[in-house]
Amino acid sequence: MLQVNYIKENKQEVIERLAIKNFTDTDIINKIIFLDNNRKEIQKKLDDNLAESKSIAKEIGVLFKTGKTGEANQLKQKTGDLKKMSKELSEQLDKTSKDLKYLLLEVPNIPHLSVPEGNSEEDNKVVFEKGEFPKLKTNALPHWELAKKYDIINFELGSKVTGAGFPFYKNKGARLQRALINFFLDEALKEGYLEYQPPLLINEASGYGTGQLPDKDDQMYHIGIDNFYLIPTAEVPITNIYRDTILKEGDFPIKNVAYSSCFRREAGSYGKDVRGLNRLHQFDKVEIVQIQHPEKSYQTLEEMKEYVSSLLRKLELPFRISILCGGDLSFTSALTYDFEVYSAAQKKWLEVSSVSNFESFQANRMKLRFKDKNGKTKLAHTLNGSALALPRIVAALLENNQSDKGIKIPKVLVDYTGFEIIS
Image 1 (cartoon, rainbow, N blue to C red):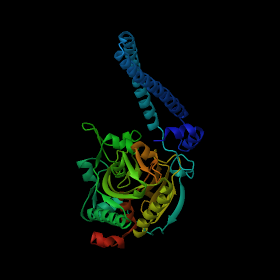
Image 2 (image 1 turned 180 degrees about the vertical axis):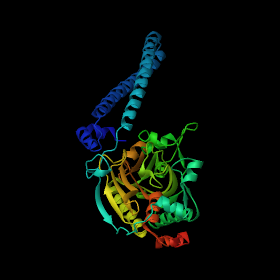
Image 3 (image 1 turned 45 degrees about the vertical axis):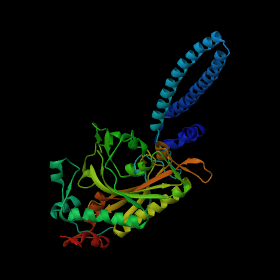
Image 4 (image 1 turned 90 degrees about the vertical axis):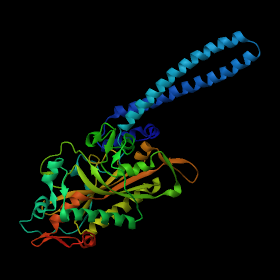
């Protein structure tokens, strides 16, 4: 959530930068400024009213003590009117504050100056590409056919038990999943991340805290009877650990990692791009989260980008990195690096990670602050990244490493899987 004072002091800049995200509703910006001015006027009237009531109460006490009962009773009538007015002003203030907050929740984060203009993923800017494309035979199979051939993932069974997008992993497919999870967690621990195993359900406050609500309400699974939400990523529960918290400057950087299942409705997804593991409603992911000092968050973003790159190198996968354009940037992000691996049998790039800096946007929603060396309270910066999301990693590993003998496992995973080939 953007800070009201920043919007008021930089109105034109805010409007111009939000236009990069294709957010052009200037009426909301004007209403926010109007409501905040109105809120301050009501607050002043209420403060003046309460101050006058307090002053009159003291005067009434003096009058009663000196025997001036008539004058005291007249003033008591006035205090009654003031109390009534205070109640009305308090109600106005409450409504205005709620209306202001509602509008602020509708405004996305301002994109970083380096974010390119654009409307979709086609306008993203590729900034790095690494690795050779594997040379497969003309009869190479896509991963959903490989999964059936080697009996390692059962999509039909998942559809029977739950529905499309909820596969069963089995045999060496299940062991490969477990191997990747442990590999990603172990690598994060080596980099100084603290491991958590978070809840898979969050409350509404947590959803608002990291910006999934109200923006992504239609993409989240909601448990109505308890008003809980299934998490779309471990970022949400992990970042919300620090909601309503005041840190010390010496606490930075805070580095957390978590494995979790993730749940996304992905309403409207259909077609060839959602076949097999390309798009699921439930999938596994290892997530890294950092809470950082504002002056160091972009340095940290670069470090997180390099860390994710190192995982893909170790898995021997060809990959590329893009800066997301304004139209493809998430509601909450100021700058995002997207990672894609090349899937040889499908002959396409598959997104496997996004590493983002949210600056103070989430922190302002969560009231996540810190005291600097001068004792001044400031908003922290939050960052997160997939390290990594498993489905498309598995898809690329299966397709890129297939041969007549079977599917070769990358060397770095052999100690985790206990086998070198799926055959």
